Image (cartoon, rainbow, N blue to C red; front, side, top):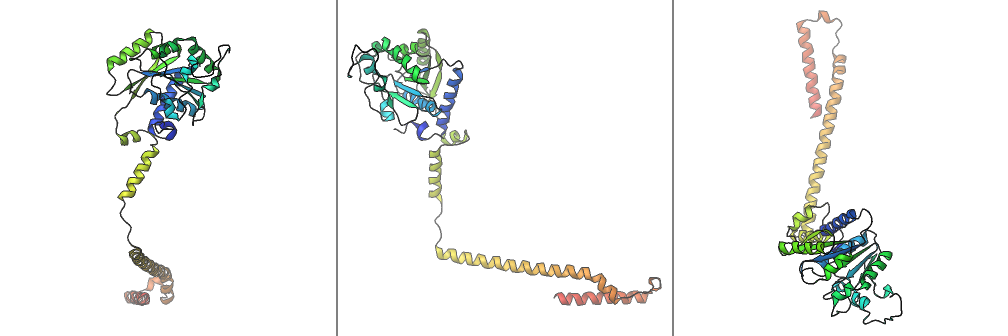
Length: 331
């Protein structure tokens, strides 16, 4: 399975979130449950219709829907390479019966011979098959309508990867048979006149347009990642790799041991100083609490009204003497 299946390879990427948004918009259009077949086409080759159709099919399969992806580009089909499947038998073999043991007396052809399992759960593939000389005539045949009717009975949604609408008429034929059509346009590549003509041609044949998907939009990767709640896991890995490269080399173990030793000495010295200061502060608080009681024991006043100036001076001297003695004890 190739890396272009980004919804399967990197489901948390911003691009996967865009495909989930596209799936949600299509589901909201299907309010009455009538949308069972969806055609993906473009104006010209190289605009990304096969990439969009394959990732959109994976997104529906991840939602629990049983999906069948049909590669209807019988001229240049490439979905089998994307999923690593066999190129044949495919759609052209089913519609024509060429290259297979086909019995005209059989009422129905066994679909199991043409549907292949992929590496994605709930997703099945019908490859393009052998290149026929008349793809448009095969799509007009009743077998194509019969194929879609039989697939509708066994799956939830059918996604058809069609041909570019401006080159051949295959996409216009399929647009009449499906419930809705998505047109893929490439930024700075698709011409506005071609896109208008493509939409008009589909509507003229009776097809319905679900919307236009703008592909290959130029945008800054950092800004693109920040626009979502979660970024791409590949981006995260790249960032981790860059951060490893910009880290400075670690110092030698000997230098680390000396640095840790000095740091430990500084921390231990700080702890001892804090402990000593705390003890001094506690002693001072205890002495201040005991000061009134000690002075009361040393200075006895029988009648406060009879205290003279000399007596007051004597009391102050005793207090100063007591304080000097306490300071000497603290030192």
